[in-house]
Amino acid sequence: MERRKFLVKAATVAAGSTVLLSSCGKDEQNKSAAVINRKTYEWKMVTTWSPHFPVLGEGADELAKTIETMSEGRIKIQVYGGGELVPALETFDAVSQGLAEMGHSASYYWAGKAPAAQFFTSVPFGMSSEDTYSWFFEGGGLQLWNEVYAPFNVVVFPAGNTGSQMGGWFNKEIKSVADLKGLKIRLPGIGGKIISKAGATSILSPGGEIYTNLERGVIDATDWIGPYHDYLMGFHRIAKYYYHPSWSERTGVVELILNKSVYEDLPNDLKEIIKSAALATNQKMLSKIDTLNFEYYEKLKSEGKVQFKKFPPDVLEAFKKYSDEVIAEITSSDPMSKKVYDSYSAFMTKMETWNDITSL
Image 1 (cartoon, rainbow, N blue to C red):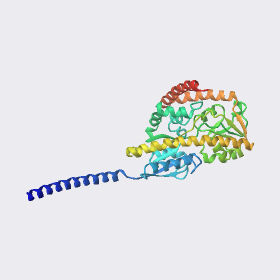
Image 2: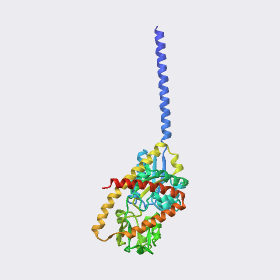
Image 3: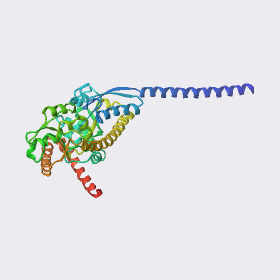
Image 4: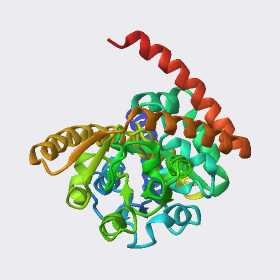
């Protein structure tokens, strides 16, 4: 009997040991899998902004930090301002070719590569920021944006916004469309084509060169962003007139672009982290810039050195007429642009109807 009890106990202990060893084996397997999934990535982000440029460059810095924090250090991103690693207006090419994994920029800079790209930053006389995001996330706009960038091996997410902008700084008072003739104006995207029809010359230059160009007379007028950034740039010291409203940029969507091959190799959780970080940066930037713009609008008014002017009705009517012509030219010559703008226009019509109902 004693021998039998001993054998039963021995068998029980042996079984328990087997279970324990089996459990330990599974734990070690799980640990090994976790180690594999904890692969870290060291990426570069290039931007079209000057290094640490207020709100925009700072937004890129914050986006990089947010991704690193949310990923618990699995993605570490070094941010380079325009010109530090590649020239500002070569951001898209650098990401497309894999020289940098990420970029922070605005899509209208790439109109020469893909005409449809410019519709995603802003459309003259187009939708507000709120309505534009509704189009991106509920109206198919973001899918179209990625479709436009797909041939370039690029994935895109909205990752910031400069809100509704001002109409620009001028050293000549604009009383009629005739006053635009012969002026050299820094205005990118579709807006540049519109002022060309009005008799001006559109000049494309990165932000870091605008002040010097305006001061030296290389350009006669410039758009930029709004009172906060414009004040920091010092335009109020070298330009007489500050015009509103912004007919060309009722919103100013900022993009996060990623090399598609690199992005698709990421684990799914890291992909979701990047999406979420971009969305968070998007909302923070828009809230911040709207607040700062009002504060600096008041500051400019109180200093009394700037003459605030509203574009005359006939000038705005001319801009709208030329806007329709330019968009018709773009969409008739590029099928992808037509596809994008048809979607945008149809969604804007819906939003206009709803906004009319809900407006006070």
